[in-house]
Length: 195
Picture (cartoon, one colour):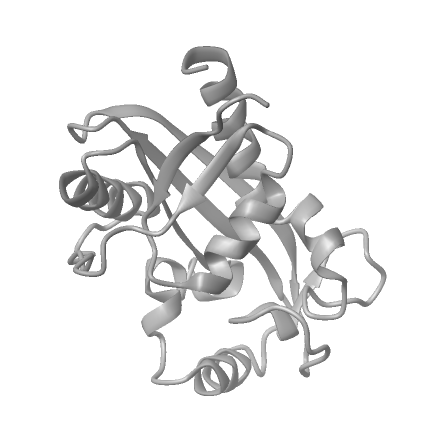
């Protein structure tokens, strides 16, 4: 049995950690939570900057290889909003969806994409690689589905006739999501360079 490479995944969100470990099954990498005091200030102006801030802080606390992601929803008709403010767009997940649907009420253009930027740093916080993944679709007029979290219930995935990200299974989602697109590039980098 080969030893797994352990990488700290800079999040306090256990659901997200589970998703990352599901996507990376069989890769020889295991992602673990950072120390409890992990609480970085995300004051970057891009997904890349915020993911680097989180990765660097996780590496500082754990003295271990660390990976962070920063992701969000970018809606064409709203000039890319909510973007890096996706998680802070309104106080609760439901309020965020309501605000989004209300802001898009009269728009004929409902094109949108989920974007995920990932940064892998070494034990000292130096960037080893940065990768981005995207998942394209449009915003539904009403919510559907119970899987997933965040904006998944109103994100109609391209190629999945009328199904939102929350309608499809975790397994399907892990094949097509912005996070899996970015993570698979990171995994390839780790396997090619750090094994």
